[in-house]
Picture 1 (cartoon, rainbow, N blue to C red):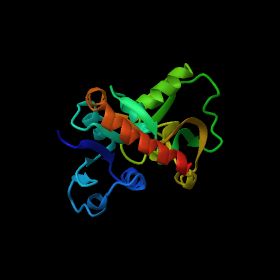
Picture 2 (tube, rainbow, N blue to C red):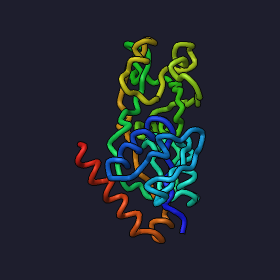
Picture 3 (cartoon, one colour):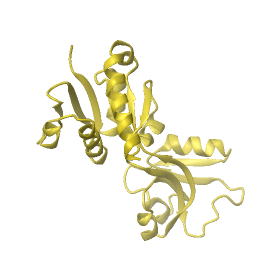
Amino acid sequence: MRPLRIALTKGRLEKDTVTLLEQIGCDCSAVRDKGRRLILPVDGGKYEVVLAKAADVITYVEHGVCDLGVVGKDTIMEYGGSFYEVLDLGFGKCRFALAGPKNSSFFEGYSSRTVASKYPNVAANYFGGKAMDVRIIKIEGSVELAPLLGLADAIVDIVETGSTLRENGLEVIDTVCEISARLIVNAASMKLRRGEIEELVGRMEKAVRQSD
Protein backbone atom coordinates (compact mmCIF):
# COMPACT_ATOMS: atom_id res chain seq x y z
CA MET A 1 0.00 0.00 0.00
CA ARG A 2 1.34 3.44 -0.89
CA PRO A 3 2.18 5.96 1.86
CA LEU A 4 -0.58 8.27 3.11
CA ARG A 5 -0.44 11.20 0.71
CA ILE A 6 -0.96 14.75 1.97
CA ALA A 7 -1.51 17.65 -0.46
CA LEU A 8 -0.20 20.97 0.85
CA THR A 9 -0.99 24.45 -0.43
CA LYS A 10 2.33 25.86 -1.65
CA GLY A 11 3.73 28.87 0.22
CA ARG A 12 2.98 29.91 3.77
CA LEU A 13 0.49 27.12 4.52
CA GLU A 14 3.08 24.60 3.31
CA LYS A 15 5.71 26.01 5.70
CA ASP A 16 3.28 26.14 8.64
CA THR A 17 2.12 22.56 7.99
CA VAL A 18 5.71 21.28 7.79
CA THR A 19 6.41 22.97 11.13
CA LEU A 20 3.33 21.24 12.59
CA LEU A 21 4.42 17.85 11.20
CA GLU A 22 7.84 18.37 12.76
CA GLN A 23 6.18 19.19 16.09
CA ILE A 24 4.53 15.76 16.09
CA GLY A 25 7.88 14.09 15.38
CA CYS A 26 7.87 13.69 11.59
CA ASP A 27 11.14 14.01 9.67
CA CYS A 28 10.41 16.65 7.02
CA SER A 29 14.00 17.24 5.87
CA ALA A 30 13.15 16.25 2.27
CA VAL A 31 10.42 18.92 2.15
CA ARG A 32 12.71 21.54 3.71
CA ASP A 33 15.29 20.79 1.00
CA LYS A 34 12.84 20.12 -1.84
CA GLY A 35 14.50 21.89 -4.77
CA ARG A 36 12.00 21.68 -7.64
CA ARG A 37 10.42 18.37 -6.58
CA LEU A 38 6.67 18.38 -6.00
CA ILE A 39 6.20 14.92 -4.38
CA LEU A 40 8.36 14.36 -1.31
CA PRO A 41 8.78 11.64 1.34
CA VAL A 42 8.06 12.49 4.99
CA ASP A 43 9.09 10.46 8.03
CA GLY A 44 11.17 7.95 6.09
CA GLY A 45 8.44 7.39 3.50
CA LYS A 46 5.59 6.76 5.97
CA TYR A 47 3.86 9.78 4.39
CA GLU A 48 4.17 11.59 1.08
CA VAL A 49 3.71 15.32 0.67
CA VAL A 50 2.39 16.75 -2.62
CA LEU A 51 2.86 20.50 -3.19
CA ALA A 52 0.05 22.15 -5.15
CA LYS A 53 -1.97 25.32 -5.65
CA ALA A 54 -4.88 25.77 -3.25
CA ALA A 55 -7.72 24.88 -5.64
CA ASP A 56 -5.77 21.83 -6.85
CA VAL A 57 -5.39 20.55 -3.27
CA ILE A 58 -9.19 20.20 -3.16
CA THR A 59 -9.21 18.48 -6.58
CA TYR A 60 -6.52 15.96 -5.60
CA VAL A 61 -8.25 15.12 -2.30
CA GLU A 62 -11.71 14.89 -3.91
CA HIS A 63 -10.47 12.47 -6.57
CA GLY A 64 -8.57 10.37 -4.03
CA VAL A 65 -5.07 10.74 -5.48
CA CYS A 66 -4.24 12.41 -2.16
CA ASP A 67 -5.72 11.13 1.10
CA LEU A 68 -5.49 14.38 3.03
CA GLY A 69 -4.97 18.05 2.22
CA VAL A 70 -4.21 21.35 3.90
CA VAL A 71 -6.05 24.30 2.38
CA GLY A 72 -7.46 27.65 3.46
CA LYS A 73 -11.12 27.88 4.47
CA ASP A 74 -11.39 30.59 1.79
CA THR A 75 -10.71 28.02 -0.95
CA ILE A 76 -13.15 25.53 0.58
CA MET A 77 -15.88 28.21 0.71
CA GLU A 78 -15.28 29.23 -2.91
CA TYR A 79 -14.94 25.80 -4.54
CA GLY A 80 -16.83 23.47 -2.19
CA GLY A 81 -16.42 19.74 -2.81
CA SER A 82 -17.13 16.30 -1.37
CA PHE A 83 -14.61 15.55 1.40
CA TYR A 84 -14.41 15.69 5.18
CA GLU A 85 -13.17 18.87 6.84
CA VAL A 86 -11.69 17.39 10.01
CA LEU A 87 -9.50 19.98 11.72
CA ASP A 88 -9.01 23.75 12.04
CA LEU A 89 -5.22 24.01 12.08
CA GLY A 90 -5.25 27.45 13.67
CA PHE A 91 -2.73 29.07 11.32
CA GLY A 92 -3.13 31.08 8.11
CA LYS A 93 -5.64 33.26 9.94
CA CYS A 94 -7.27 36.15 8.10
CA ARG A 95 -10.81 37.14 7.15
CA PHE A 96 -13.10 37.75 4.22
CA ALA A 97 -14.23 41.36 4.22
CA LEU A 98 -16.42 43.68 2.22
CA ALA A 99 -14.39 46.82 1.55
CA GLY A 100 -14.98 50.03 -0.36
CA PRO A 101 -13.92 53.68 -0.64
CA LYS A 102 -13.72 55.51 2.68
CA ASN A 103 -17.01 56.93 3.95
CA SER A 104 -18.97 55.14 1.22
CA SER A 105 -22.58 54.41 2.08
CA PHE A 106 -22.66 50.93 0.53
CA PHE A 107 -25.74 49.65 2.37
CA GLU A 108 -27.79 52.84 1.99
CA GLY A 109 -30.29 53.51 -0.78
CA TYR A 110 -31.96 51.07 -3.13
CA SER A 111 -29.81 51.21 -6.25
CA SER A 112 -28.09 48.06 -7.46
CA ARG A 113 -24.46 47.63 -6.40
CA THR A 114 -21.50 46.16 -8.29
CA VAL A 115 -18.90 44.19 -6.34
CA ALA A 116 -15.57 42.82 -7.59
CA SER A 117 -13.99 39.70 -6.10
CA LYS A 118 -11.60 36.84 -6.75
CA TYR A 119 -14.18 34.78 -4.84
CA PRO A 120 -17.50 35.27 -6.68
CA ASN A 121 -19.24 32.35 -4.93
CA VAL A 122 -18.30 33.63 -1.46
CA ALA A 123 -19.51 37.10 -2.43
CA ALA A 124 -22.75 35.74 -3.92
CA ASN A 125 -23.52 33.71 -0.77
CA TYR A 126 -22.81 36.70 1.48
CA PHE A 127 -25.12 39.05 -0.43
CA GLY A 128 -27.70 36.29 -0.87
CA GLY A 129 -27.93 36.17 2.91
CA LYS A 130 -28.62 39.89 2.94
CA ALA A 131 -31.16 39.68 0.08
CA MET A 132 -29.32 42.46 -1.77
CA ASP A 133 -29.38 43.11 -5.51
CA VAL A 134 -25.68 42.88 -6.32
CA ARG A 135 -23.82 42.33 -9.59
CA ILE A 136 -20.57 40.44 -9.05
CA ILE A 137 -17.55 40.75 -11.34
CA LYS A 138 -14.70 38.22 -11.06
CA ILE A 139 -11.22 39.75 -10.91
CA GLU A 140 -8.03 37.67 -11.02
CA GLY A 141 -5.40 40.21 -9.96
CA SER A 142 -5.34 43.18 -7.57
CA VAL A 143 -9.02 43.47 -6.75
CA GLU A 144 -8.44 46.85 -5.02
CA LEU A 145 -8.17 48.41 -8.48
CA ALA A 146 -11.84 47.82 -9.30
CA PRO A 147 -13.31 50.60 -7.07
CA LEU A 148 -10.42 52.95 -7.94
CA LEU A 149 -11.18 52.58 -11.66
CA GLY A 150 -14.94 52.88 -11.17
CA LEU A 151 -15.62 49.28 -12.16
CA ALA A 152 -17.17 48.37 -8.81
CA ASP A 153 -18.67 50.02 -5.74
CA ALA A 154 -16.87 47.64 -3.40
CA ILE A 155 -14.83 44.43 -3.20
CA VAL A 156 -15.00 41.15 -1.28
CA ASP A 157 -11.48 39.95 -0.56
CA ILE A 158 -9.16 38.40 2.01
CA VAL A 159 -7.88 40.93 4.53
CA GLU A 160 -4.98 40.33 6.91
CA THR A 161 -3.73 43.67 8.24
CA GLY A 162 -5.80 46.01 6.04
CA SER A 163 -2.71 47.99 5.03
CA THR A 164 -3.24 47.38 1.27
CA LEU A 165 -6.80 48.68 1.61
CA ARG A 166 -5.68 51.80 3.48
CA GLU A 167 -2.90 52.57 0.99
CA ASN A 168 -5.52 52.52 -1.78
CA GLY A 169 -8.09 54.67 0.03
CA LEU A 170 -10.35 51.75 0.93
CA GLU A 171 -11.70 50.56 4.27
CA VAL A 172 -13.51 47.51 5.64
CA ILE A 173 -17.29 47.95 5.53
CA ASP A 174 -18.18 44.56 7.00
CA THR A 175 -16.50 41.27 7.96
CA VAL A 176 -17.89 38.39 5.91
CA CYS A 177 -16.25 35.63 8.02
CA GLU A 178 -13.02 34.56 9.71
CA ILE A 179 -10.84 32.02 7.87
CA SER A 180 -7.86 29.77 8.63
CA ALA A 181 -6.13 26.63 7.32
CA ARG A 182 -8.13 23.39 7.45
CA LEU A 183 -7.23 19.71 7.18
CA ILE A 184 -9.46 17.85 4.72
CA VAL A 185 -9.73 14.08 4.09
CA ASN A 186 -10.91 12.08 1.09
CA ALA A 187 -14.16 10.22 1.88
CA ALA A 188 -12.99 6.82 0.56
CA SER A 189 -9.60 7.12 2.29
CA MET A 190 -11.41 7.77 5.58
CA LYS A 191 -13.14 4.39 5.19
CA LEU A 192 -10.21 2.36 3.83
CA ARG A 193 -7.41 3.84 5.96
CA ARG A 194 -9.33 5.14 8.96
CA GLY A 195 -6.82 3.88 11.56
CA GLU A 196 -3.80 5.58 9.95
CA ILE A 197 -5.69 8.79 9.27
CA GLU A 198 -7.22 9.07 12.74
CA GLU A 199 -3.82 8.44 14.33
CA LEU A 200 -2.22 11.24 12.30
CA VAL A 201 -5.16 13.63 12.77
CA GLY A 202 -5.15 12.94 16.52
CA ARG A 203 -1.46 13.81 16.83
CA MET A 204 -1.94 16.99 14.78
CA GLU A 205 -4.99 18.02 16.81
CA LYS A 206 -3.07 17.59 20.08
CA ALA A 207 -0.20 19.75 18.76
CA VAL A 208 -2.65 22.45 17.57
CA ARG A 209 -4.29 22.54 21.01
CA GLN A 210 -0.93 22.80 22.76
CA SER A 211 0.13 25.74 20.56
CA ASP A 212 -3.06 27.74 21.27
